[in-house]
Length: 357
Image 1 (cartoon, one colour):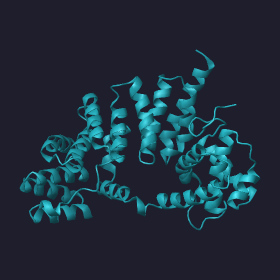
Image 2: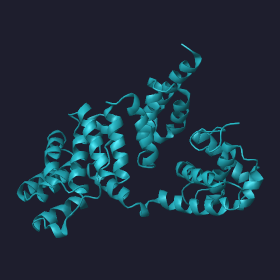
Image 3: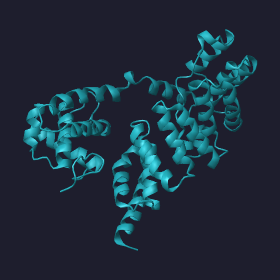
């Protein structure tokens, strides 16, 4: 066994150890990117890295996550987690028919997974208006996961859409005895009005994949938290304009755009800088009121310099800092954080536009 493969296997063990203990699983993203580059294509280590990258990036960057999921499916066409993650990517991108097809593929490999059944039924009902077809899938999910308020709400909604209002009220009432939410209350009010189609109560959006479905977690993790929180999270995800992440991203992108206009970078490099910004924002932006770092301008400057670094553009840190009106020290500090967190290398395939020289 060659040294490169041994190194990949050891790195995978480190990732598994870190995932088992990390407060935020996204902390392992730099290690997963490194493993994806190091491992041989199609190897267990490579597929492990690409699958976890897809699952961890899916809500932040569904387009990139879909690419990682497809690489897994190229080598393991029956991988249910790969299909389920690809389905969620397509859901978030608005490709609902593709998402339905992908969930069907996931269910072919894992027919007893209630979360795949739920999400397929939810898409058919809410996104495609095929409530009659959805009921069978949602009934299957409800039979295995009746404790989930989200599954109960989706099943009740589909029942009401086909005129089975009495059954819908019973399903929802049982769920509300365990736990209730604003969404349950609004759904109940709609049912009490006779579920009028002109005042439909759609669920926030096609539901995200549960991590136990796409991430392999055990049932007790779902039981340990309040199912009503799932709906709250889905609603928050459905209203990105309220998200602190997106608000900060918009400000960084605006600052980045102004600074990039002063730098001799081409259109592709500027586009890659904006892609890198999405990965960097959660790592470099500190809560309001915290000290240090030079603010969002230094974050934007670090992102721009990262492209300079990756593509070997002949510019110094001082050149870039001047375009963003920040100190060289603040740029250097933020770039050091960014390079460490994202495991950046010259010619990095994620962000480079030029061949490595």
